[in-house]
Length: 138
Image 1 (tube, rainbow, N blue to C red):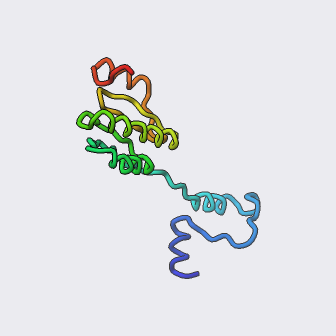
Image 2: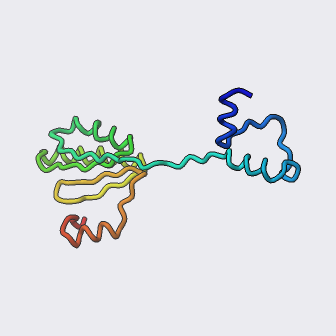
Image 3: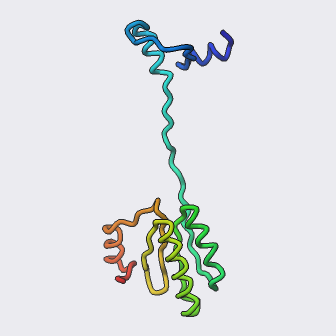
């Protein structure tokens, strides 16, 4: 048994060769060592980026869609864009978010929230926003 094998065995990892014997035949000490050797990976906290954009033209719609494809929520402020281009922009992103199983919310006049399928905007939060004047009824 090498140094690495001894170290791994010391911290609870052991290599099992051949078919495993039933727990009754191994005894309680061997059974507890086998259980200690089980390693479960727990997901750590992830930072989620939210994209806030004020596009100047329709040509920026693809970049916003790329963010949605990467599971990033996008807030788009279209107030400075002319009405026809803004409408095309919203139609494009609406189709993209539909294809990605996400959702879209109108936040204000010319301001829209697009969230991918991994983000949920609950009704209660929306009602709280409405009460504080941050979300308009659509």
